[in-house]
Image 1 (cartoon, rainbow, N blue to C red):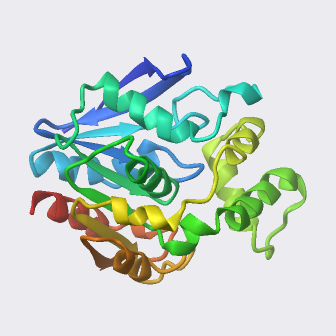
Image 2: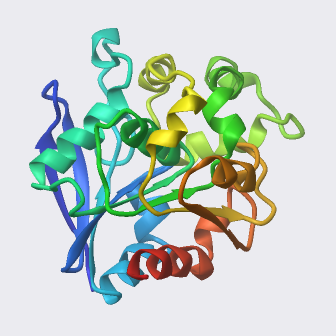
Length: 253
């Protein structure tokens, strides 16, 4: 199967790309920071796995990522901008409350939690990948790490804890000016709102992934959630077939 790429105008007119693969019940997939739909969902075959399982994978490129625009004006990054982009794509695709599933990895997982916790998106099932409590409630510390990567980009050398993130950022060709503005548009999630996330939820996380805290702890705080361990750490769990198999298996249950 092959994916199809299209574009749409988000809530503020920013031109965003999305990719679709398969037919059937729609699944909206949100990728990680400085990544893209291609890197998280298409390259490693997860979109194809969902298509083979009878789903229609709808894979967004967030603004500043992938094939979407990366505006350099601060006005293009209001609070909650990525949630608004995801909601705009859901509206563009005609996704009705309870009529689609939602999957997010890392930054996409944070965005999905914010969207569902605030009642902006209402999926039938929710898969939160590569995320724990710290990634939701301690965003400022995590954001500071990535801001340092951007601000000190040209001076970070091998051996520096930030070098891996710098290398990935460079490989993806991300506009650093736009990325810096985007980081300031995110904030912590009020953990009290987790009780509002009542649909069946899977916390899918690499067994060695501790980048965003404990996924098991987050699963315990949600009303109807279970933890699913897959091989790998934060950077490579998404490359494993078990990752996509876990998502497809949960959504098909």
